[in-house]
Amino acid sequence: MKSKPNGAFNAQAFLESAGVARKIVEYRRGEAVFTQGDACNHVFYIQKGGVKLSVLSKAGREAVVAMLGPGEFFGEGCLAGQPDRMGSATATTDSVILLVEKDRMVRLLHKQHALSDRFIAHMLARNIRIEEDLIDQLFNSSEKRLARTLLLLARYGKHDKPVRAVPPISQETLAEMIGTTRSRVNFFMKKFQRLGFIDYTKGLKVNNSLLTVVLHE
Amino acid sequence: MKAGTRFSAQAFLDSPGPAKTISEYRRGETVFTPGDACQHVFYIRMGGVRLSALSSTGHEVVVAMLGPGDFFGEGCLAGQPARVGTATAMTPSVILHVARATMVRLLRQEIAMADRFISQMLSRTIRTEEDLLDQLFSSIEKRHGQADKRRAGGSRT
Image 1 (cartoon, each protein chain N blue to C red):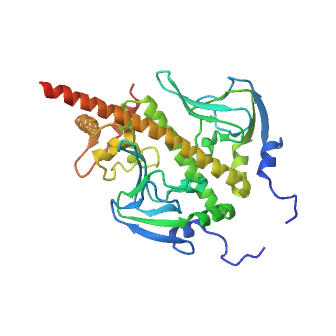
Image 2: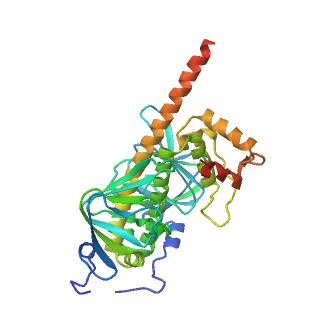
């Protein structure tokens, strides 16, 4: 087998640069990366920024399935043979996104261990998160779901040091994430603020004490 | 590369060997329960498995129903130290237990295995996402219904 010097595949370098069958696109905050019903031609990787995945019901209500950040893939459903997008992806902030053609991604996952490793880790994490969201949805009150969502947005339990500050997010979007109305979210946010669980000075900050809502029965 | 020495994911999953054991489960028998240590990834050779979670109030919900050819218990690959849910055989089942370290190594070294695993993860994610959406939408509709009712009630006074 021929192997050029420096010819080893570098997954990180691949994901951080443009090249054959892949391009880097910048999106402004609020811009759609794809919308429900679009053809599935690419898998996406967030280099910078953030993306919201949402789905519109027949009744016209929107539900948010995921809020993703740098280093995450999305639109991977097309690898499983989905012909069209089942939902929409919207930039939640100014974002830089790598678009990899579907066929190229399939070939690379077959050939490049470094990339399939990365991708498997991503799928495992996504899967666990979605399962947890589903269980949360089935078991918990909207108050608890809101508290959990805020803690996750502030990255509690994900890193050693939680960031505390929640990226700018509307109460509307929070309602779409936890499956309730904006007025319910507003009601609980006021309650959390009164109890000192969250703090609105200089953007939204989440305090450790919010955990009590999630843990308390 | 000699023919015959290539790794076959299917052959690996269908035969006994080092670092993997095959167990049979009766209908209703549990494969793991919450709190069990995460040491294996499981692969269903025959039968079916139900993954469920128990709320603190004792309600059980089914997270997935799996069949032959499906993996489960893969959360330990993502660093979960203990099982968070329950896996129960729905019918008499034959299940392969692959040690976590072996599975990690196979996914690194054997593309055929990684392929299999990725495609299953993708379909699992899509299915679970659909279930989540069902729940989100029904919850949103219910809440909006209640809000509409409250508004209608309020306008009378």
